[in-house]
Amino acid sequence: MNYFLAIICLFCIFFCDACLAREVLSENAAGVTLYSADDSKDGVQPNAQTSDSTQTNSWQNKVQEVLINALSLTGIQYKYGGNSPSTGFDCSGFVRYVFHNAANLTLPPTARAISQIGKSVKKDELQPGDLVFFNTLKKAFSHVGIYIGDNKFIHAPSTGKTVRVESMQDGYWASRFEGAQRLDQEVEKPASN
Image 1 (cartoon, rainbow, N blue to C red):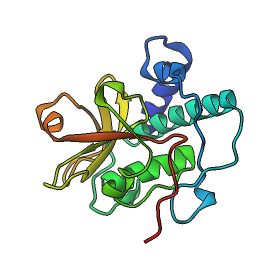
Image 2: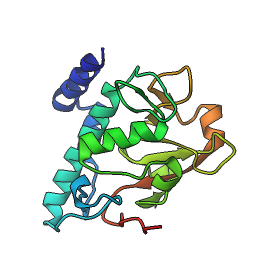
Image 3: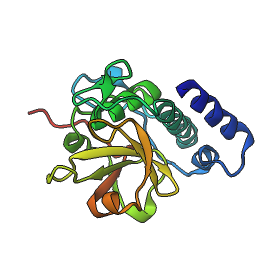
């Protein structure tokens, strides 16, 4: 089933003008610097700079891969502390897995720590691939998901549920929205403790 979703997404990317993935490819991400998981075991660190247009195209491709990878994991069971399709995912494990496999980015281990990297984005300026954060445990930034466009995000919600797409306009999520981050040229290596 997950492979079926990935094939549909690929079809949309190449053949459907109205498709979300096509929208992702047309987004302007000028000035983006890519980060490699191989560059630092502490977190995110920049690779060597390349031209703006190369970075833009490269980042757009990475965002496309992030969305395809995330959607292909729909239906995987939630598991607290889970970080792979075989064990299940919690919210941060899901986001870390997707960004590591699709964009070669290593993110911090918790939603709160992930919320401290990247560039803050206003809700009305969200773009596919941005990270969205919610207060679900009476703690700020206790839940994270990946924005996919059209006021929707994909995430690993909670025990007994599976990775799924949900609307940010749903009352539960709308009332718990904390903020959003974009991983771009302003992402810095997290400070060591």
